[in-house]
Length: 133
Image (tube, one colour):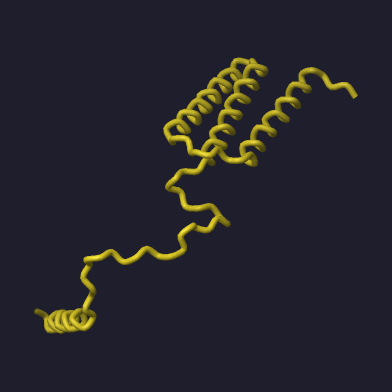
């Protein structure tokens, strides 16, 4: 079965886009995170490409519209992959235990709480409040 060229390029484009999305979701995440400002720029550029693709669709240029839409989708897939990077401040991922399992020691110099004094002061306060003072 021979496929007409107008349908063949659409099939190839769909396969390329599906592969780009799959790679962005399944590939190993980058070692370092990308700054959020850079990710925002990528997404905004993809949105700009979608707008240009929409304009190309309205002016009856389907091949150009398809290519511009595809570029926007690939840029979004790259942004999704880059957003998966880890930051030094991120909590450890599932399965990774922290290296130091002991809680940190109490800092020196802090006063200890006298619970008996606290209870006496609390009782005196609550009695004053119930008396309407």
